Length: 249
Image 1: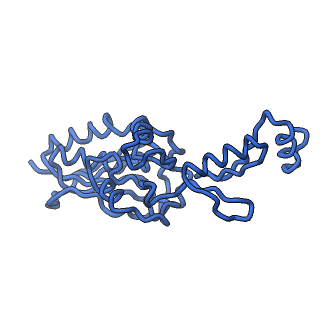
Image 2 (image 1 turned 90 degrees about the horizontal axis):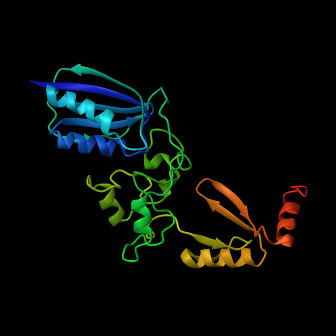
Image 3 (image 1 turned 135 degrees about the horizontal axis):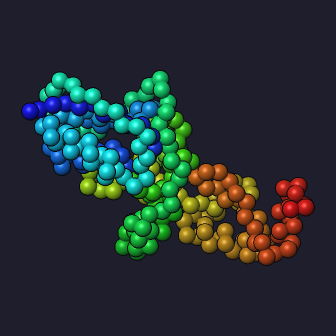
């Protein structure tokens, strides 16, 4: 017997690869319908055999992405709609803003392996990420969690990143911060007048060189600025204290 179910999931279910997870689960189960984000969480409508639907519910709770936190999962049965396929629908807003956003997530092993593989286009790319890791809280400007609602909105994906983003079997499927050296943020070194001096690996080398020389460097990361100095250099350390008006620290 064909039945239709509506599922509302609340918790930390945005920015953790939840929609791609639901999509793959639905495709494996031959279910039709959709999944979408809104400002309160994730909504799903799925249509199929009743036993398959109940297995689908069980698998959502027991096979959810590793960083996902389900606070509540409510469902109700509806009359069949006649969906022809299963899709990830465009996100919706809403009056209730209750979806939880996780903090930035440390780089996963897959991305680390990729970053240090000279044959991969993201070799040594410092802003590497996927559905299982990378910036979340630091880039989100509003909910629901979609690229246009993050600081990544100014970086248009290149064709290769777009292919990964649209590939259901790729770990970057619908990963909102997806980027690479060709289309994403770049490591850049500026002087005190705001002029670009170097980029990429050379920028990192210049930064390390100046710190060793006793200079104070401002590092802008995804979550703000921090000032760096060689703590073993008395002169540099005292200059940092003086500039911060915290000579006693």
